[in-house]
Length: 443
Image (cartoon, rainbow, N blue to C red; front, side, top):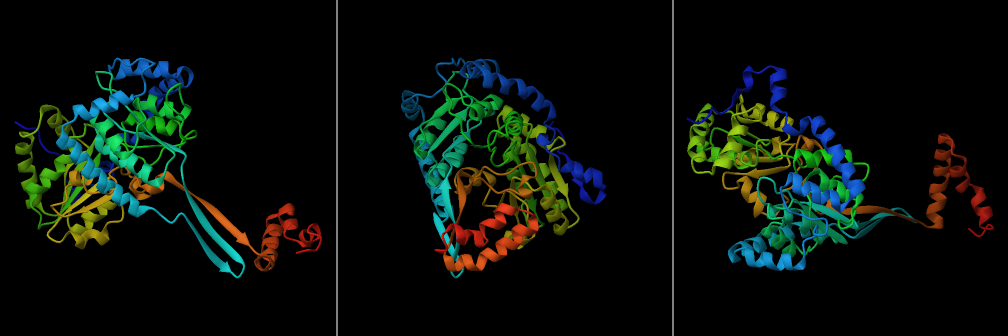
């Protein structure tokens, strides 16, 4: 007999119980952070030797300190190991991702004349180097390669590279290498977890130091990013997977259940909720799930059951769709899919989500793999303030200014008054008559 799906009726929950539904597994990283500290320090001191040791201890992979980097031969062999139809799928999906992110690219430079003789603008430049973290622990993720490396290449990052855990054979997943080469990236390093983040933050004999790391990861990766945030930009917070399926009374509960299972199979640290105002939809979904589990492998069923029968997933019944939308906004899910006959009716009510997928024909897996928008999304309520990964994460802007003498005559008196008010003598002097004197009254 299948375990019981978790069920909550919002109308009967007090404030504390409702708040409890918003919690994720990465909410309390204290214990993980303490365990990550010595790993980070070992990488800082020992470099590649520590990476090899941790690969052997944590990944059970026979990696040596002189073989941290994937070789050209590894890339070539990967294309022989991956079926041609999968390579064609990677090429198709990569092209969609590339086209979407090319459309995101801003102007390289812009100017605006604020007043006569006063010009302000921005110059957009790529970051010199960015590390792309590609997880592996509960599967292989060439999709993450696409989502992290293609925007980097489109943005013009000088040195994008990948860090990813090795497999039991001590090698990088073949599809990961294929996806990397399709994207235009051929630097891949065999290290994962907190040790990979540390390698990027400090650099080792093999792994280059980078000022930024992007990509989703385990609580160990999230913890290391937080601990090393003073040494590198940790990018969009992307921890364990999470999703809400929002369904009104017009939805098909069996189809909604099929989509609820998508993120629940990532791992026991995932979160996945069906939120609906329809008891009939809720009951149909709950009834359908055991049959879908019967069509999945044992490992994935175990993950899904841990989520949907535990405190971080299941079914939430709302009194109406307004309350359901409020719950979604408070939760700020990584993935949101709306099941409704007219899903666009609810689009205006949603403010907080990493992505919104509209309709029963837009399951999260299509968003993850084939659609084009980035699937590296903010988790753990970061969607309250953060956006999906995109080309902007690989770019920075530089403010520009140019003032003619005419413009200076307009701005200088106001700048001097500001400086005097704030008590900065040199500021005030630089826009006083002393400037004309320094010019020899040339102006």
